[in-house]
Length: 250
Image 1 (tube, rainbow, N blue to C red):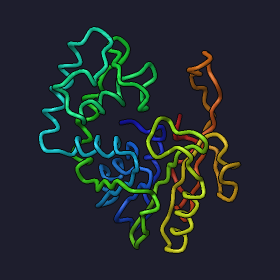
Image 2 (cartoon, helix red, strand yellow; image 1 turned 90 degrees about the vertical axis):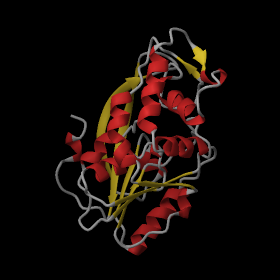
Image 3 (spheres, rainbow, N blue to C red; image 1 turned 30 degrees about the vertical axis):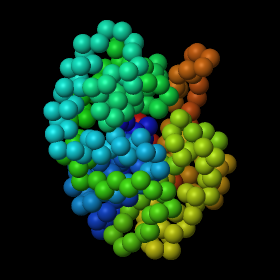
Image 4 (cartoon, rainbow, N blue to C red; image 1 turned 180 degrees about the vertical axis):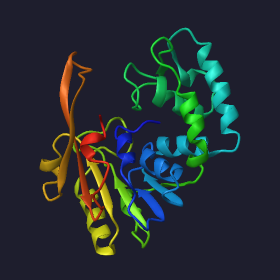
């Protein structure tokens, strides 16, 4: 499970934070990093996609370490493309772990069930190293609007892109006003928010104080070559300070 903004985890957590919350959980890497640094005591994530919830809960199970090692051995023995839904001995959690990490030519989405063993490797070591912290997460299958701010919270917002779904359940027809409603709730409760977004941040959310984090070249999977992508950060009640956001991707 990899976040496109994992480098934001270098930013310090606001003083006094007890609970880190991600209303759009996904990989939850920002909160996992905060837990690992012992910057917070509790992590909470909300997600409407049942695949995300099932995968998280599989990784949180007792015995997940052994299950991951067995899955890695199974994958290393594969030599050809195969649909993991046709392998009866795989659990649903194992299938989803394969799906997000080694299925499809471009991994990281729920777009394919076929593994590509010659192109991708399972991130076994990285996943094992994060399990301890993943088990400290409370994971809720719920809309982001189910979050109610409370004293001691800090929020990391990484909502879906407007007009896209990335093959994630619940993102079709996503309304950006949802994230703004969460920001408004947090402002009223005095809860700091770190909001990340990509291209078009200042058009989709013009009222927020955007900082340009970086401009990078990324592969154009449909047409070949590369395209330019901008990545932005907005801090709402979130203190500024080192490291500079412009150093995050250096």
